[in-house]
Length: 302
Image (cartoon, rainbow, N blue to C red; front, side, top):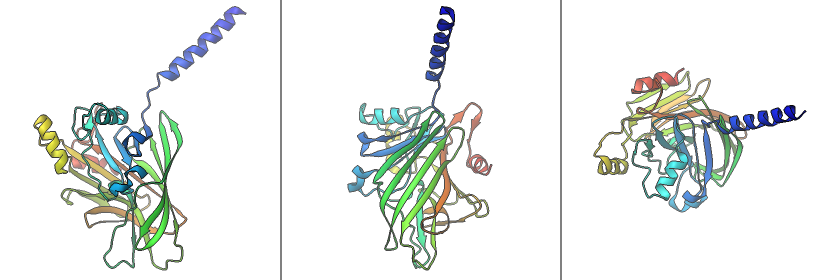
């Protein structure tokens, strides 16, 4: 009997040890130490969205992009270096860097909206989120929801709820968006994902039938990041940044006012699902990599 008990205890301990050694491939968290950021990552890239403490600086509901050199998780180490060690995450120390400037734009895959009554074809984005909630967190899956109380689109007020899912092995995050508010609009409200471009808009791939809008640019297209990296290591190049937005079953894809976007007609209260993701020409996972723009465009079409 004692042998059976000892064996059972040993088996439980072994199981517990095995669980402890499982290395997460996706990760995310609320970041109060950096003005209410909400940050997450998958194997390919890290991202963040802006919270209420940053509102005085007029942020958007866009997505910021952090480039990663490998599938290794970097969110916590990037914040630690920046806020504890005073080593800016805009500089590549070997693991990657934050070099993508969002400003008040959709950033790298954020939500965009348009109304067909707008004669100037404005591309609308919202502000900082008001509430966050983690819905699921495992080593292979991270799901969270952000809610926005006010998203102004051509003078009409909406509320936005966006649920983002990052999963191991998947290049793109899933975004499920619901807008509520004005429902008696007689025109067409267009909704989808956008990419703010800093470089030549010739480096794009668009497919309306596939619903794909993909982009590549010089990773140091932002002058501030370029200067910081040059002063640190004398480098004037950090490779290429890659970004993509995909709306399944087709979309209207265009480049306008410095934004590459994929949108489709939307009815308030419905759920729009689109996908977005990013990577870096310097990223690798064994033999897997995307050394050229075309490699990225080909991978997004799979």
